[in-house]
Image 1 (cartoon, rainbow, N blue to C red):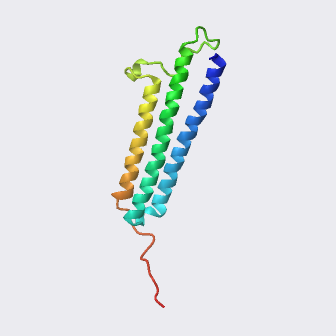
Image 2: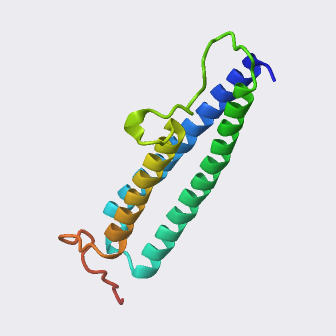
Image 3: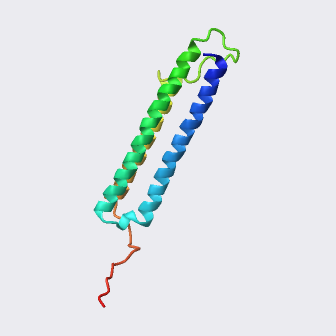
Length: 146
């Protein structure tokens, strides 16, 4: 595999990673809006369904990210096999700076992303099932009998 092919694949994969992160944050933002507008007063069955669907979507995005990570690591391996790259780039993310205490940039970014999404997921679970929202916006449901 040539240097140009590896760089092209890296650029395409980077775009896919950015898209996955963007869609994930879009899902989370939509869930927060739905939680504030509707779900906070919804019955438990509807909140369970919404949280289950959010969980499925985020699990799909996580699996997709894991696959993309494997492809990115594959391009790193292919790059390491090049004897003398013309761009003189030593590697893409396998550097292990001292301030990361032995983690590579890949490892640190995956750990940071995982911790951030875990914190967001736990927070949304808390807001969905435990937190008692102040005030009620919907009021009582009235059924007229004419």
